Length: 549
Image (cartoon, rainbow, N blue to C red; front, side, top):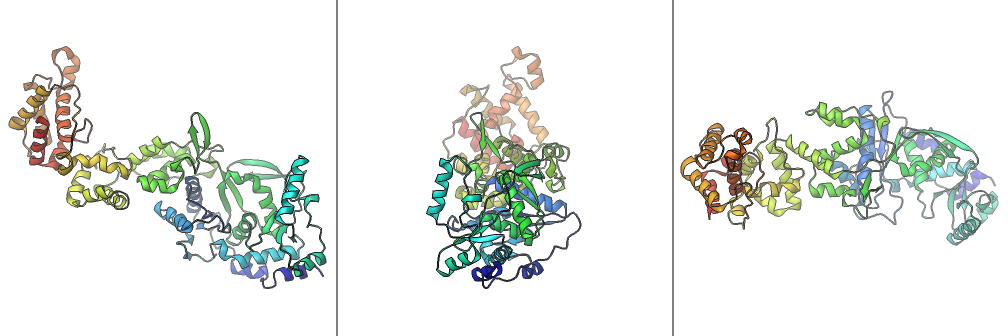
């Protein structure tokens, strides 16, 4: 009996690997085109670090006219969560990063290199495992979990490296006949890779981001097919990246130490290995200490958080590009109106150490992104978010014409308003524009420099009786505010006041603040003239009278 007989005994129905090599030929792409993938497991929510990797992978494919595909690595079925695949697919859709190929729903896929779900590729893995057994490069292992634990305890007691290798690899040297007899007797087994490596030898590897790295060779006889018949991550990724013709694997740097094993698997399977790029994790400042963003501690670690908060997807992508390439910020400053798709992304300029996550900066980008939108875009996106997360806001936006007038305030100017960073800010930023909320609310008016009640009432009454005309143009309106200021004994120009502050108790800006607070309940709002235009005559008078009362 030889290795071929043993392989036929274990996998009697597996095809020859030539079948799959023909079925999944080299891709017909132009020279230099990069094939990348996002390959998450449906074992929990999508992490912002995963989206970051997907963004980098997509950028690399896009800039080289290559292919970006989504593969779902669902071989760890014990840990799989409900709707895990749907969550992954929707996360990419939400950020306008749908793949060129791969899973497009829980059950549907596009592309010629599938199935793109590992649990559906069992026959493929069996073919390549059978091939390795035939070559004498893999073998059945009959060690029970208890025996594995016993080996580990002995290694710990002897203070040597844990693992299944060398003299500790009990089933490695079983003869073909011995292995076959155990199988025929119904003993349970897994399939292990027979590593040709030695730990005292080094391999040199060039990582696209990390640069040149040295490692000890892999000498572990890792499991490649588990007891349930499904492959381990290590084996599946090698087979899949070969057959899907991946040229660049972009993944978290926690996988860097697996490079010797993965290169060894590619070599022993007779495959050309892809290039690897290991991305540093996104870090968080925790009381002066840097740590990885944690799924357990940090809500912003989940991609779903950004949708729930209503942070625009473009803002998140711009922020991630900013982390990925330090040159992006200067490019954006020089090209404020250009699409981020025009930025020349360079993977070689990615940081070797992890970037710190900065929510303040992200929200600042959110303000800029929203400030460039038309009033129609702001309305549609606010409404879409509100329908899912805020019924009160959705109700406020039912009057589309009025809502568009509100969102049109200070929009499209050279210096547009930047008071909205995320859609969850919208309600608070516009609620005072609704009479049913404002006039019926229990408003507290926090006035600024001019705070005496009698003085405030004098200004408001005089404004209603003598100066208010809803039909005034902006220049006329502001000149009347100056006249009002002067009549009440305040400086009509701010610069006059600054030159002689002892001459007046306050200036025209302080009078404007009295009007602003009385009309909106706030000291800071967008342009007051435009606000009054949208509110209309009756609302303005009612609000000023309420403040007087």
